Image (cartoon, rainbow, N blue to C red):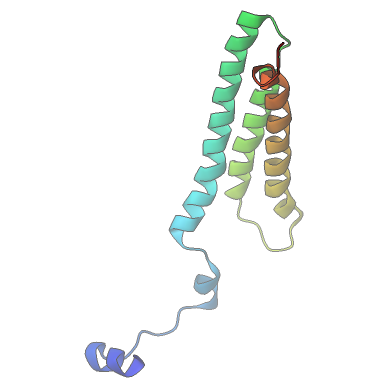
Length: 121
């Protein structure tokens, strides 16, 4: 394969610098930010639905915690944009915000919407 490349194209391109080889492709970097941001927006929308349900059923105000979790996910997406050196303590910020916000959202969603799955005699 290398010989065919050389014969068709001439000399191979020079090797890339080590810094360029370590950088992730643009698509991976962009989707690493868009993913948590999209989940954060979905959690905020879930908070809006829960707010409407609270108004109808007069149940506790769980929707506020959905907003907190959604903002945490948006902050995690913003933390993904930070350019930090390896070994920096801010490297823990993204997974910590992501995990805590998703856990909070799962607990609050279960608590607010479990009446749909409850057996009624």
